[in-house]
Image 1 (spheres, rainbow, N blue to C red):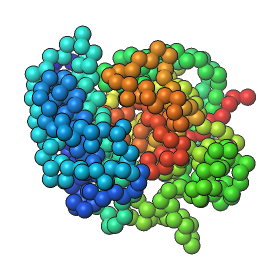
Image 2 (cartoon, helix red, strand yellow):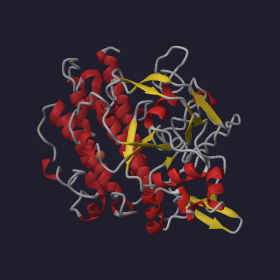
Image 3 (spheres, protein in one colour):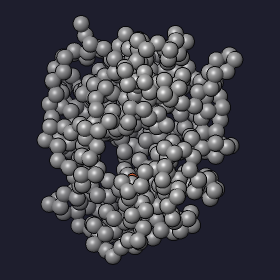
Length: 432
Ligand SMILES: [Fe+2]
């Protein structure tokens, strides 16, 4: 890619991302923007100004070497300084001020983009990394804001066409033969520090489900008394299930004739062929035990997603190296729900595993740990401070994740009790 092409690509990605931020923040009134919809989430107006503040810090001040726009608000929008539950009490910019602020920062960032030299010797700028990091950061907050919309009560404000129907039946398990594969990346220009470096991992043979666990399968676990039987739960999982009173995925409502769910303000029957979403790690773990299986490790998930036995190499995505298109995966908030299993035959991996990318984030059994040879970049707060914490990894992105923030190597992590995120899972088992 020429430098001019890189500039155009970055400008287009910044603009596309901002359009989504605008949609998510303009769909509600000022009261909804400034209110806290759940103690787990920031007020939407905090996310908005925080996105602008990170853009100011990295692109305007660091890359551009420009004077600060609003140094006085850095502290308010530092995610490490204030827990989400405390953010509504802060003297935040109001919606009008927040919109004016992010627009002013964006003007300056675009001016920096026009003038910057993408010197390959400067790691922060190699391949446009700093800009890619800011695009991904804003897209990640757009997914967080979508999760806030899901927690919001009141009439629906977001609309989108339904996801595609299933094209074929995808059932059962796929056998993944023993052997090494390359996990992580050295070559994705916008990959974050935790996806690096590429390294070979040797795995024994295992089986993995061809598709994520569906609502129908999960409902069978509930019907079988899965939530009332400590046999299926880890000790911590059972303690949490008791304390939190878990009895079904978040947003499910028991109806006389079956299950309903609340989805962005609509109440509707639970579609049984869609991947289950809004379950915590402990619920995923309990389902897997009940089904006589387990969750895949992170390496197993990535091998199932990327390894091509014909060439021996790992692909960027399950379907190949091309960026995600609408036929490959349910990404980018194009639809406001997961798609039924079998809806993306063109997105299957060479080993025949479906819907690894998009639809629902998939809990894996691994904690969030550095790859061998990890180096924090561009700052320890991106990943390093979370290593060794009480986190489980989630892979593959959801219908709320943008393609810019989702690769075959992309790693997400969260506390095992969290389920306000678009989290589901698939099962695996040992080959014996
Ligand atoms: Fe952030």
